[in-house]
Length: 273
Image (tube, rainbow, N blue to C red; front, side):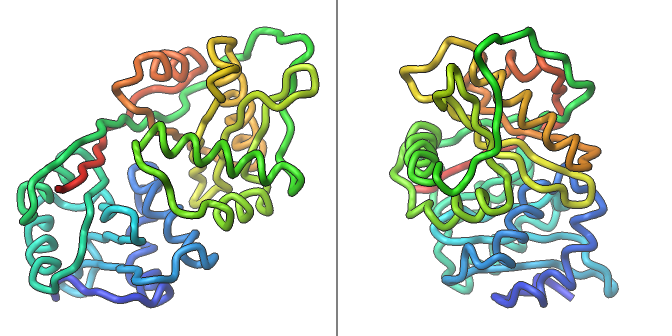
């Protein structure tokens, strides 16, 4: 069989989730998006796709508008057929995100040209490096009273990272607060940075976003809260702790390596005109 499409999350999960879990590291984003759909975060015009060969799933992709098409770590030769099927169905696809080779292959097959690109790198924790002592500073898990601040910071992060105003992030942030997936770093009792840490899926947990407001930068808060979030992931049972970095930001890439993260693979987000 060829590419199959549905909006039913459990039909998709039945076909694609076991395949995604064969490599939860490289498929970290599709797995966490799948959990988000199950939790009701995206319900409008969701596209869920998988490819079967000889009765076995060999590839998966998803789209939660207005976000781009998200590719799992799929065989490169399956990408063009996926693009063709979506073009034939007149599916609106604003961009594509996924492993570098697959994202570039999809962009090359798409009918609209590339407008811009963000190059990313996936890192995996090797061994967590103990942080230096920071008197007067500490981490804590976010609570509902932090919601307004965290929604504002999440909006600011999205504007800086993607260059566009995001959709309403309150439901997403509230759900992460409820699952204890957001960590605040405080200096003298005042929140100065935060980091997300996903609950483990197949032993995999991912850090992100990591955000420090402009007025609090260059003080080591980003590294400190990333370290704290990583420690929480390990305490929660993760065996693989991951994060993505923007390759145009050498500072963050060096910080994460300094606390024990090592490169796994390159990824890309490509936006179409």
